[in-house]
Image (cartoon, each protein chain N blue to C red):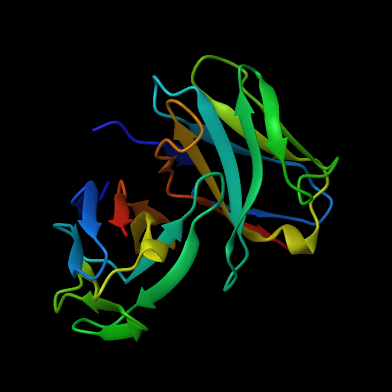
Amino acid sequence: EPEVTQTPSHQVTQMGQEVILRCVPISNHLYFYWYRQILGQKVEFLVSFYNNEISEKSEIFDDQFSVERPDGSNFTLKIRSTKLEDSAMYFCASTRAGGTDTQYFGPGTRLTVL
Amino acid sequence: TQLLEQSPQFLSIQEGENLTVYCNSSSVFSSLQWYRQEPGEGPVLLVTVVTGGEVKKLKRLTFQFGDARKDSSLHITAAQPGDTGLYLCAGEESNYQLIWGAGTKLIIKP
């Protein structure tokens, strides 16, 4: 059964460093999403991506964040200069048709900023 | 990789009826979470169950974690149109990553 994969499972970094979180969406899916969940808090939408450009982004997704689909399979989230408050679980999701179509979530990357 | 099978995938019932959604795995999870997701939004956590056999109630929703911590169920009593949505279960592995079920699309007809 196809699934969304994410690497690494856990990333520890120093404040101010750049991190890249990687996702491999399901192969025939066209819409991609990043969410984050700070420990003990709700899952928050960050950004959606379609046709090689951002469709929507939340207030959280400021200039420190960027997304890219560098090739036909990977979907990345880059944080340029990490802050302590960026520590969270980051989930990638993909869907075939967008809109109300079911989103398939990856297992998440736990980012710890020291 | 652990798999979490969620059933049914789709359920459409009349207001007032009861329903149960199931999440099953062959592997043990340290905890299991139930989410509800509205279109265009991120999933919203409803409950986390941790102990085998644990039962938690949230108004008309009853969540149960299997004794062996491999399966879970969500039971809704007297469903209402406001319960319409996508319900997702997610099992937590020992490394804190989540394994997600595919979701149950629930429609409650007035």
